[in-house]
Image (cartoon, rainbow, N blue to C red):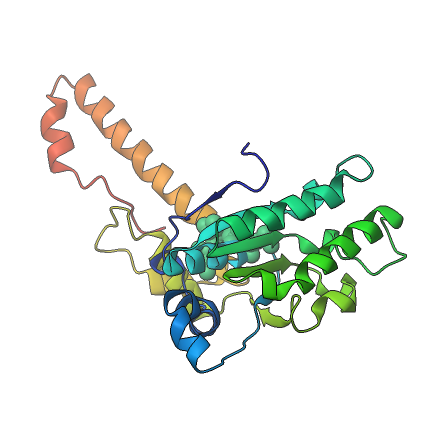
Amino acid sequence: SRREGFSSIPNVKWGDVGGLDLLRREFDRYIVRRIKYPNEYEEYGVDLETGFLLYGPPGCGKTLIAKAVANEAGANFIHIKGPELLNKYVGESELAVRTIFSRARTCSPCILFFDEVDALTTKRGREGGWVVERLLNQLLIELDGADQRKGVYIIGATNRPEVMDQAVLRPGRFGKLMYVPLPNQDERGLILKALSRNKPLDDDVDLIAVARSEACANLSGADLSALMNEAAMAAVEEKFSRIEAASNEGTSSESYVGGMPHTIKAV
Ligand code: ATP
């Protein structure tokens, strides 16, 4: 795996994200345009929030959105997994937090993404005890140095906002809360569409109908992604079995490959 604090511009585009238009617009206002046109915002003295918390059920696009925002803004992206920061010797976690923020400043404009951020910010006195407490204090120090982190935006993600220490949810820290819900029927359709963007989909596949089907009720984006992947696998395997059947019959496989629609069929 990559070393901690590794930065790069992600290749996730908004077209890869299904639904979540409202969040896209919010991030456009709060991050993308500010990175693209910093002078305008300075001239008008706009002082907006730089810390965000995406919360909601697992697999609904929190990581995906954060990456798409960075891509759209042309900003670097640093992905930190909360629990990994905790798995360290005494004192090392605090040092790691300092190092990460310093890296983010060096490669600004930058989006610093804390996945499973609840691990770092559980209410003091609970679960992790004083190790978490020292880490949390260091994190608060870094978050509060907002004026020194020009062009560095912080996005946290969690499935359990209720266990987080209120102190980190204040303005200037993870100040703006954004809910990322389980997709509804229409949104499931949009997600399936986004997921099939670069796949050879048969004309008779009705993604809207699939999204409406009982089998898809309550599925998350991650579930839909797994479903799409299964469908693609099935299509590939069918293609191979056709080629094999063709060569067993002694027919030239060429003509079959050329003639068959080796595409994803209705699920
Ligand atoms: P967790 O809370 O488990 O970290 P998450 O909310 O960060 O989950 P992601 O990692 O963004 O979820 O999503 C996992 C995968 O599910 C994505 O890589 C993508 O394939 C698919 N997915 C989830 N939501 C969407 C969406 N809205 N549009 C398209 N794909 C999605």
